[in-house]
Length: 64
Image (cartoon, rainbow, N blue to C red; front, side, top):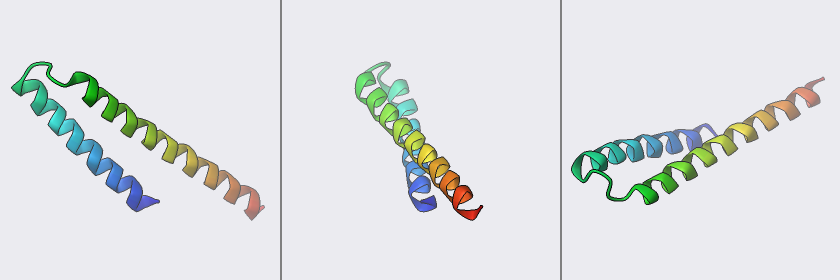
């Protein structure tokens, strides 16, 4: 789970860097695609976070 999150984080950073470069190079060239990519990554990240919360919740119940 940690590795997956790290990979997503790295991809997210790369996307943001590329997004900044794209904005500098040609003001607003591919905004919709970039927004979709960033939204997808954010959704995946929030899904992972909620899944981790869910797992910790189950573990707490089991440990009682």
